[in-house]
Image (cartoon, rainbow, N blue to C red; front, top):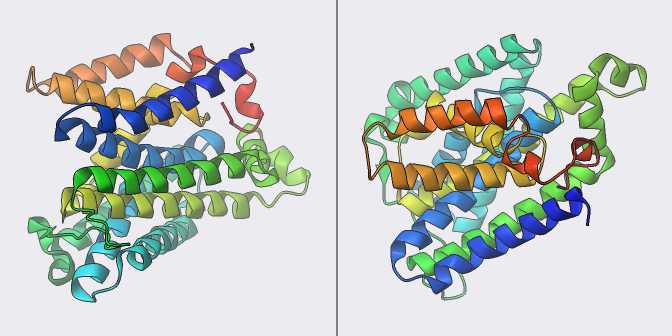
Length: 318
């Protein structure tokens, strides 16, 4: 059994365990925690399409996450749109905002791209906090974000809503696996490896980067809608730059450029956060130290322990 096969088997075991845990352990704590992990994992695998696969560090993904959350909230509460159409609209909103941000940010690259996405995201954060207060509720946010009303199932029961999240997560994971293994995914890796050579081979580098950013925005929008519904609440805090920092830490910790890595990183981050926050108020500093040590000693993240160095170039299936 190769290390690549071990990685694929491990991912299947981890996903199966996360799905099963809430149904076998008593109490609502595990249901809510794993629901949160799956939503963030969906966000992270979308972020990694830009960061780990295409090679662009974005600090603007918080804006994409929050835009999806607000789209679902406003449509369901103010316009009585059904949950599934509103969730689809959240994906469209995230993709549309990503497209608009890409029109400006993709004019530059490297550190300048990262800083420009940060600046654009902070503009969205300020708009939501102040200028669009009538729509977003300002810093007070909007309570009472609804959950699905489908097939007569009570999704206000956390276990039922968890099952809904599992379905959305598995669909998103399958679509991402297909994208990364497709010619589109291989072209994105070519752009990451050497954009000049990719251009000489006939690839439209700008269009590929823009497409990756838009797909990533759709994933962020869906995640934002699910998160707002899980918490029954949304505020501009979801748009804050620290949210972008968190998903970047999760991805690097788990192993960027792999399908398994972001999921592992989110699970480890959230579990550590849950335990450390009950022990000390300085839990974020301890998480920072763990991240630094992982960056030094696990250069390919946790997932790097389970796949070979060339696996990332084979469609990111590990």
